[in-house]
Image 1 (cartoon, rainbow, N blue to C red):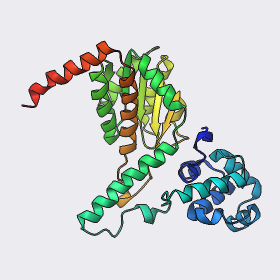
Image 2 (cartoon, rainbow, N blue to C red; image 1 turned 90 degrees about the vertical axis):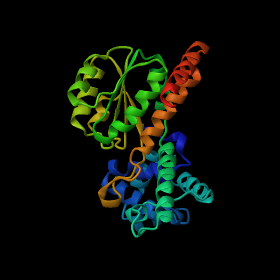
Image 3 (cartoon, rainbow, N blue to C red; image 1 turned 90 degrees about the horizontal axis):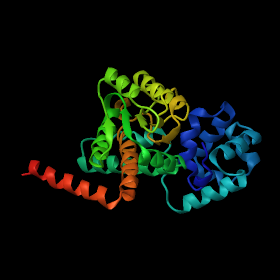
Image 4 (cartoon, rainbow, N blue to C red; image 1 turned 180 degrees about the vertical axis):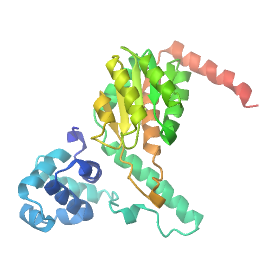
Length: 290
């Protein structure tokens, strides 16, 4: 994954890469995440010694992040810190613990968590978003694949794209998802949503869709997972793995925002006749609003 366009997003990119790093690179990354401010004030030698890593591993980490070396890493971090970006990297800082029953505090925390997840997800954006947009724009049919609450953003997108006139599938039953995947082929698009990328039924459907020639798009937190093997286009979220009671608060907000962005991109490209159809559909649906 190329993060070269995101060199001013050092912290969220480092956090995203953490599970895929070597042990020595991970030590350097964890040290950076623990105190980004300190990194801007120390030398490469100090960084290696204090993190228990090596200079070579730090340079490799810099290149994985998308910067040329330690000097550029320090420079970009200094800029990021100067803009006042948040750096909650420890679980205790993102778990929402000790909020009690004060709903004002809870609302503030939940809203801030949503905002930060969206900002961090945007930091992971690559040219794959343009590829996803182009694939959907040309698609004859779109199939959405997910299990459990991951189907929520899929159902949201299904409703949106149906209004644009697309032939869509968004089956909840896993057997019907496999059938839908079998019906996709060249010129069609399969979109999967899975936080871990290891949902067996979803991966099976995506494998079939890809084999049949459909363009496959995966939305996930994991850069390395089973699902990624069957995705031509990869859109990553920056959703944390755990929070209150091991449940991920706002887990689906980034996935839904990605779907909304893709929908809005397609909407901008519609010809006047297609826009008129949307207006007619909206007007027709008003019968259910009275």
